[in-house]
Image (cartoon, rainbow, N blue to C red; front, side, top):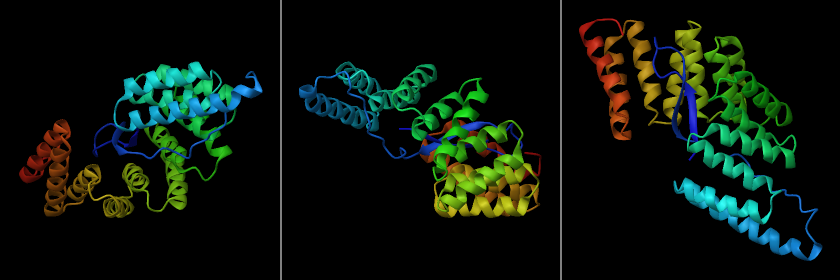
Length: 274
C-alpha cells in the first residue's frame, strides 16, 4: 500500500518526511499502444494484459508485492508498450523501497503516455526519496500544471518545500490542497506543522484540531498539538494529547514513536524542556 506522507513528527525535531496510513491510488489511466500488433491479435492482447495488470493490483493491495511484480512482468511480456503495467510495477517497486527501479518504470510509462499527470506525480514522489529534489519538484510541478485539481501533488510538493525551508511556498500549496479537498486530514496536519514553523501557534492548533476531527487515529496530530500546548504553558492539555498519541502509536505497533512520546510526557510532568 502507498503511504501517506507528512512533515516532521514532533515540534523541535528537524523537519523531515515521514509516513502514516494509506493513500488511495489516484485516478487510473488505461491507454496503451498496440500499433505493432496485427489487428486480429489486439483483442486477445488487451484482454490478457488487462487481466494480468488487475491481478497484479490485487496482489499489491494484499501486500504481496514480489508476486505483483512477477505478474506485471508477465503483462509487460505480453504487451511491452503497456504504460499501465509499467506504472503499477513502479508503484510496487516504490512500496518495496526500490526507488531507482520505480523511477525507471515511471519513466518508461511516460514514454508511452507522455505528460500523464498521475505518472509524473508518482515519479516526483519517488524522486523525493532520493537526493534529486529538483527532479521531484519538477515532476510534481508539471503534474499540477497538467491537472490543477489533482490534490496529492500539492501536498507532496509542500513537504519538499517545507523540508528545504520554503515555508511560505509550502503554506500556499497546502492552502490549495485544502481548497480542493477540505476533508484531507494530511493537508491540515502538514499545514499545522508549517504554521508551527512560522510561529503562528493559534492557526497550528486549529489545523491540528481539524486533522484530528477528520482522522481520529492520527497520532502525530495529537503529539504535535500536545507539544504546542506545552510550549504555550498548558501542561494539562499537553499531557492529555501526548497520552492519546502514545496510545495510538502503541496500538499501531510503532514502538519508536511510542517511546519518544512517553519521554515527552515525562518531560512535561517534570516541567523540563521537550
